[in-house]
Each structure stands twice: as C-alpha cells, then as structure tokens.
Length: 105
Image (tube, rainbow, N blue to C red; front, side, top):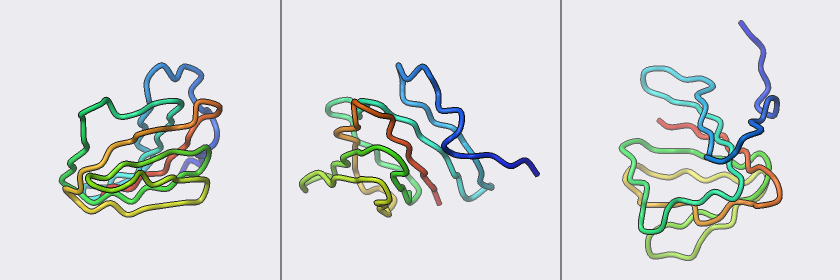
C-alpha cells in the first residue's frame, strides 16, 4: 500500500492536458486530469461507451452538452455523465490548474 495525494506533484509542463490513472479495476477507471486553459477542439465531442462521474477539485471549468448551455463547474461541483451523452470541455481556467477527479464506470 502506497499513500499518495491527488494535489501533489502537479505537472509543471501543461502544454497538453494530463490524464493519469490513479486507481480502478477491469470495470472502473479512476483518473486525475490536470487542465490549464485546455478545451476540447472545436467540432469534437466525447461520446463514451461508459458513464463518467467527474468532480472539480481545484480551478474551474465549463462542460458543454449537446443542445444546452454550458455548465460552469467550480471547486466541489460534480456531474454524472451517462454513456453516449455527447459533451465537450468548452473552457478551463487560464489562471490556475483545473484538477479533476474522473471515475469511468
């Protein structure tokens, strides 16, 4: 057993968004995502085969779902995204890292 901390060792180079698996099993993926001014490319939508529960632990972000206004997520906010619900990240904070905890199930 190795104790770790989600807030420790944030990457210095955030040229690209960073996805790190921090736990899981054959049926569940738990990951830490670190963003800073990252967005999903225009015209691209996530359409995942699994449900995704995501929470903002630090920073802020906006998620866009097809046909609705963006949802602004701040520290402590979370959302459960059903499988095949098309969505994209339309904004993340430029001033500080946005730290996400994502569980794909």
